[in-house]
Image (cartoon, rainbow over all chains, first blue to last red; front, side):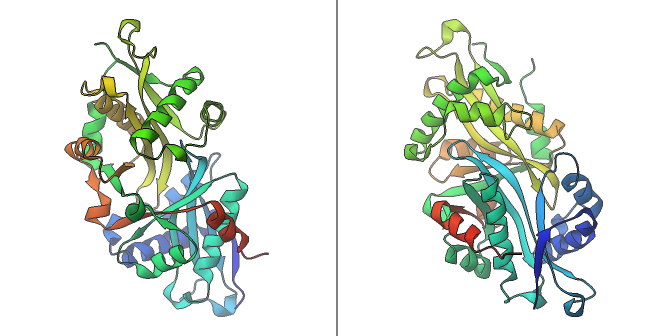
Length: 172
Length: 172
């Protein structure tokens, strides 16, 4: 099957938003999704976009459930004080009926190609402990599990805790 | 002691670069640091900066080893497809002789204040498993350890592995 990987356009945001929710369901955290396709349009397709995205598109005759966009990789640029410009892959998703065809691997490689051209020394991402399929894909391509090898833990401030913390900032 | 927290200026990059190395030594990975103060100047003080930074400055009479800038918090903006604009705290550091005075907590709160004003719903960071002092600061302020609570692992492509991955990208 002829799968086309291309940069996402503003018009793709409805499809991306649908797949964001499908991925959250897969991750067993569907109630976490609070943003809509309008917010993706605003944040990703403005003067200084907050993210970039590559989508996987299949020909009309192969589309599933009415959709021709069957996967996506959403990433953004970060910074390492040790290595300089870097990138972070926020989401990588392929619809279940299109898995096992190398689309996920293609999206991942495409992101690596794009961010390397932009001068990034690193591509990082997070994976759930029970998602061994994803872990196997990443480790087979040489990714290092930093949580295991160096003992890094991810931490997050959110909601009331973030508000409280901000409220405690020293005044001028 | 009167500690001033303020946005970093280009002229602070030598001091920030020195403290980046001090932090890497503390983290037991000093050989990982590959960037210089010139690169911090270029990347953080251009048209579209790749990061922002807040420094802690002490009065002349309190300075240590000749330095008046004794701590820093370096962060950048990220994106969550679940929550929208977010932020990531890359480094938080206070020189050993100035610890225990609330400077680290002040820097952390200041970052929370700044990124909340910019509309971020989340502030994330990574902490080493053995660094219980840092973990205690974060959890005492309500941070959630995502590695423990949700099972997220951090993964990284770098060097030859990133090159190989990019080289495998499907051609047009």
